[in-house]
Length: 266
Ligand SMILES: [Zn+2]
Image (cartoon, rainbow, N blue to C red; front, side, top):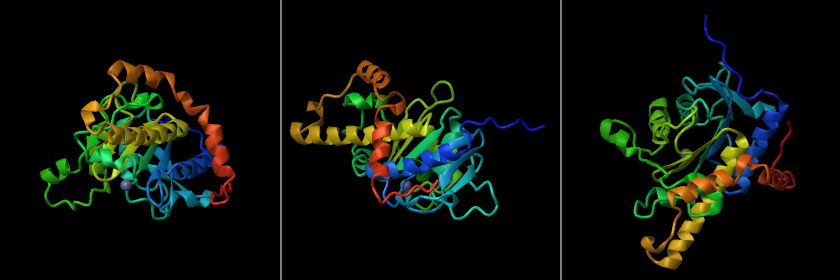
């Protein structure tokens, strides 16, 4: 008999509302525009995501659908068109059973660090210790070299590329990845969390850390004159801040709930 799938997040109105708010918060903070997306795991083998649409416009129950971790396809046969890069999410959930939320962003603050190996992204700001000292950069060219017939569009449009990206996060403990964030060369980043709040908080502070590092380089002139965190500083700062995003979440909610662009009808 098949093992019963363990429920991770009860699929109720509270979760649906939070997902919609999360899409809006990501847009408010410049982490998504018409592109980029958020997902939340609801069981061992399924996750929730909006259909193919701009995240700031997500508003209704009908916008939200369940997808299978196994292959990234819709749970229901009548699932409308989904994001072509939903395999980023399905493969991260498959590789890391402890991950409950995933953000994919094309943040303009972060992308430059995916193409600048001489100044890698690493923690330099006390809110971003979770970035550690070695944010991996996933390069799709490693897959293109293995199979030259692949279309080299830099996107993650199937499970194979999704699995390759997920692997870049590295295996950590308790079903979690070693790194919370991986950059995608010339594209963006993927960020994980054990909750929607944590995945979004880490995304927000990843972009802030990137902005600070870029500004510091402009002041210092060369990368060796920019002082970043040691491993211990990053680890200790990572443990001391954000925890659960309890403090910023109500503020982020108030910001999107008071802006008429964002509608949440759930
Ligand atoms: Zn993308």
